Length: 261
Image (cartoon, rainbow, N blue to C red; front, top):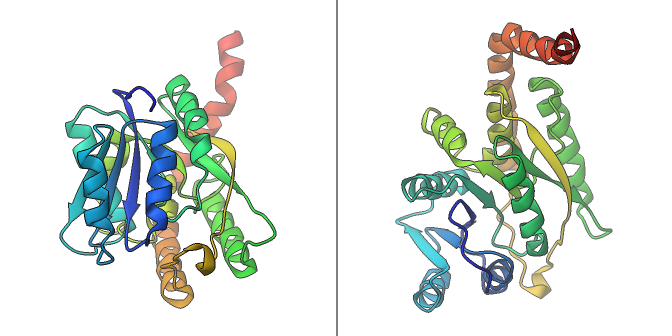
């Protein structure tokens, strides 16, 4: 097992993932420590199984929420505990086996070299990726690029990322949204609005079939309605912030020239 970091941890929100979660945790612990799992009201017995693993592994911690509150709410709970424990950055990844645990060290090293930034995974899809999901992601990415505006967000929905803890926790604590599937996209937009730069790193995606133990909680109608409402909310926020965003981007472009004089 790797030596435990004192600044960067892996944070995994988990809701009824089935047995594949144990493979996910084993791979994450193989490449990094500590790993924290926030069990979001799971009823499939995995909470008890994870707690048994944590009892024998000082690098694994399980935080159990009383009921299902949503991915964003689980991440926020983890952020609060992480900040209280002195951690400065978290790498978020899903519990369903889609995200590439082997890339955890690369993402963490990038974050350690650029602690002011968020390190965003840009998904590299294989032929098995659902076309409807890929198409919907493109639409969300276009909206996010417009809302930021074009601040370098490589992908809006891929949850394999490293965030600075303090700014994200502050932003989430001030918002009513960002608690469910809308978390990933809204987080990068609001972090960008706060001046947190993005570093994009390619990452492969593994779509696990039901036969392989894959479990998906994405509902096309419900979650696309949620994303649509989110983008309406972000667009209105973008309009309010537009003068400041233009000033920031204009200033960033002329600053190198000014430094030469």
